[in-house]
Length: 542
Picture 1: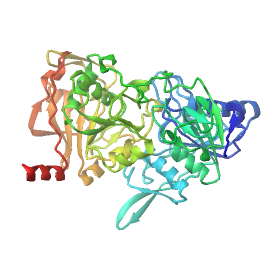
Picture 2: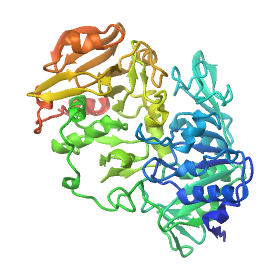
Picture 3: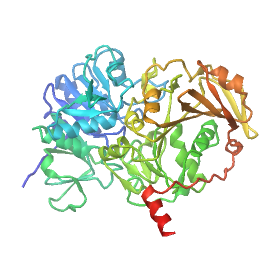
Picture 4: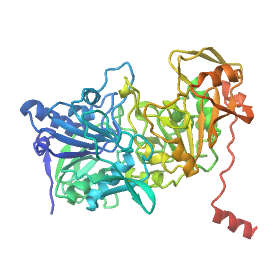
């Protein structure tokens, strides 16, 4: 019977060879095998080895809120190249993580690719396929006709290619084969079988393990505890022991950032939603309330980080918590997604899927709409969400954003109209813009496109932009203002604050006055239409 080695984190680090490609299963603090990564860093500090590693991170390893993750490896000589869907991010005034400093200083080759594509690359490597053909990233900074996802001048020019198949353009990402996969679970038995009962998501652990194991590589699993061989329920095993070569026990591993263990986010109990803190009344809450008006009861809705993450909590306050099924890329389906450093998990989820499987839903457009944040919007409707020059660590990178917008039937971008120090009061059912932000977010051309407005129009997607003072739509004729907030002057506060001309709808109307009041708004969502075949059946039987 197979028995993996049980090692300390420092011993596991001795399994890593110079030049290895290491794939890490993590999502910021969620599921991060931080002890193993620390062991690799400790070995390098002691021995100056291993050297010249390449690391793969479909979603960021570690964060700026207490879990170092990739920063354990962010040392010249140790790390040669990093390929990641996202990177640790945090406040602009905080010192950037070491990995960002290395990227800025040209001390490491660095790519930023869509998270879903990176999971697909692991599946391609596992099944010995040459790579991934996808439309995800076309027209964005990932497109090689722009930057190809390169993050600095030290990074080689070519990785992603544009290919034509049957008269259509596709991006081609060649497979990357990991030598080592570092994954995490809750319990390992003596045969290496892994269960995830206290994890908030399996993330991509199984796919990463297959990719390494099937190509002759190693799989190192960090767990909280060991169990007797054969004592785990086969139905609960998420990674079979035949894939696992070494186990590292870390009894104090955090469930996610600043969270030792919360059974309500791993699906082991349901917590009363009254336990959730209410969202304070603010400009951001006003924006989230208006975004909620884009929803329908029965919708399946994807959700991104930032102001958009407030929308589920707005629904909770309006007694509409179950009206919408939220799907987030880390794997939760249903429940209420949490905020800030715990974003990526949901309280009371209905299901917890593997991230790779969740991206199958998202890339295939199997949901109704997505709510996402933005940094900049330009005259074509293109959006930058990943690149803030001079303060790049404020954003995590592309993450699953490009995967999501590639096929979402409807996209709602949510954020403030201007940036910088400002004094905008929510006053008597409207806005009082006393001092506006010095920087408009509606710019002539975005610094780097994460989303292409032209591609969205070509795909027939509905795109809406919700801000505190105006709602706009992407139309073939241009970006069009459809609503303005009570108290806002259209010319002074909206049109003059854009770096390019905005169109104004002939049916311009006021944003709902009730969203600018501190009390509950009485929101009611219209019902989503049933599937066309269900509707036809009901009509026939009526």
